[in-house]
Image (tube, rainbow, N blue to C red; front, side):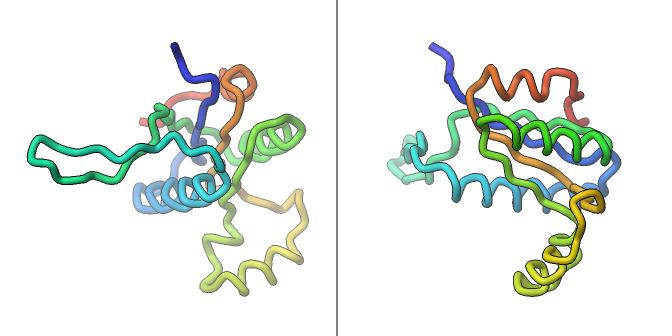
Length: 136
């Protein structure tokens, strides 16, 4: 039986690989902190060494243009999924306090997303992401 929920990461197309990797890690940490019912189970290798559990969901990484990301965020916010956005305000800030101060004066229409992570009912996430391309 397949999983009824689905996580997806959507990154802005054309990101430098280091920025894309950073964005994916930031989004993953933020999303993981919001999920209460974790399906993660530790495992053991043949020698008995314990390996920390990883998410059992496949996590597609998709790409979208900047304006498309902003629209995607707005649509996702109107629905049930958990949505985490990593934006340029956060990426350019040196501390969390600096980020919060800069965010407080950033207009929604000026928000530039580096990436988004979405987790929710599979059918809802599929409706939101169905036309986006896989990252390459």
